[in-house]
Image (cartoon, rainbow, N blue to C red; front, side):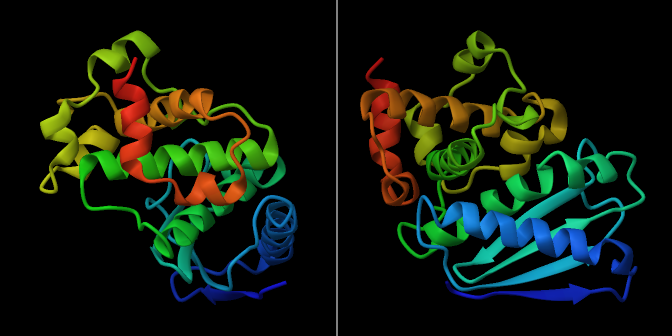
Length: 217
């Protein structure tokens, strides 16, 4: 099985007390993933940066390219300890690995529509791996309200969209995490039209195919 090499960045805070548990959770994720799709060879940066995590789970991920992503942790966060126990770390890792896998194929994408689909696919990839419900950011807006805010064709094609506005609620124009919720909904609808999707398709499907399924309703 391809190696996942862990790089511990501790200049801004040590992670020694949690290293063994973090490493074990990452290794378990790789083994579970191998049952759905071949894991890629990866470098994983693991860093402690207070204030740079999702407050609700005390951690966050960021994919850089097909072979590299970062896992940012804040052990001082009140929710961090529980996230090590309830699978949140595994799900965060799997989400970012999906981004790495997709980067090796159709890529994350430059347009708003492509970003919605890439995030939605990563969310459903995690749900498939661990048989878990949507994350808080994937159900942040009630379905009816979210559907009413779904971008039109021109917005979906835009490459100059503001990611922070759509996905993080910057500026207050849209609810926090709207983009993640919309992406999860769109991919969910596409999956209803193509039963039996395998791991490779869940990674490599074209954004246009997913968005066409949404538009067809």
